[in-house]
Picture 1 (tube, helix red, strand yellow):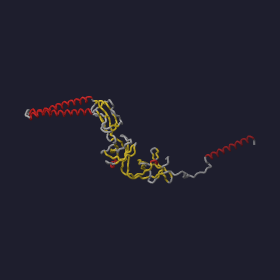
Picture 2 (picture 1 turned 90 degrees about the vertical axis):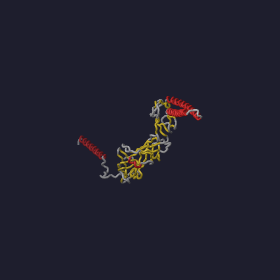
Picture 3 (picture 1 turned 120 degrees about the vertical axis):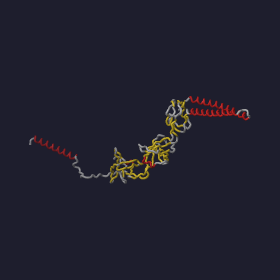
Picture 4 (picture 1 turned 180 degrees about the vertical axis):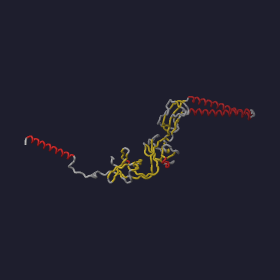
Length: 361
């Protein structure tokens, strides 16, 4: 064999060995030397971790209570407005300030009233002097008539003048009281202990009759107002107890319904009720605060699970239940929240157990 033939043979052998090695590598990558699993159900080795915590689906029964939005208001709210026009000379209070009954909260300037009071008092003094003179004349003529020193006509004239003078005194006194009352209207006083809610005008503004200057809330007395659906109207009556909650307080019991508006709202089909709150000093409850009213309405008979068992993915609500020892996803439809539970409208049955410590659906 020639030298060329030996070289060609050696090259062919090397190429063959390289090809066989490449095929072997492909077979190894594809797992050709591993055992194959027969087609069918794959059995997973059970985890050695502890079993998940579960809670049963329970049926809640008994009195059905519901929460409805409400608003805290003052029991008595009044607007302070003058009966006369004039410029505001004094306005010594501000919004949020507490005032006592009889305290000056505004003074209106009206110079003409001072002159009118002075004139009325002057007229009263004049009429009282005239009445005193008429009484003296009538008394003197009675004595003369008794001694037959005066005629009956003169006596009757004197007595008529005495009566007329007395009537003029009464009229003058009424004039003084009227002028004094008008002058008193320039001083606006708090009609009861309360808190200034709104100051509608400022010092120096022109006050007009009927135009509010201040809004005053009565202290120590609050009221809650709520619109209750007509579905629960049968459970509402005067004296019915309510439980009130606000963001700044716990439950406030013993609030009693004291007013029910007889007609329903035709748009919302709700009934307006009002209840007076008991004294809640120190709880920071203010007029205008949002509150909830808990009211018994019908009976409760619903399936429920702990709120924490619900998982949400977009609009879907789901839970994990234990089925044949394994967690299984179950779609559900929930209702309202009832304490620590949430109502289950569909998707679960009584006796199912829901997984509590599974984070992902």
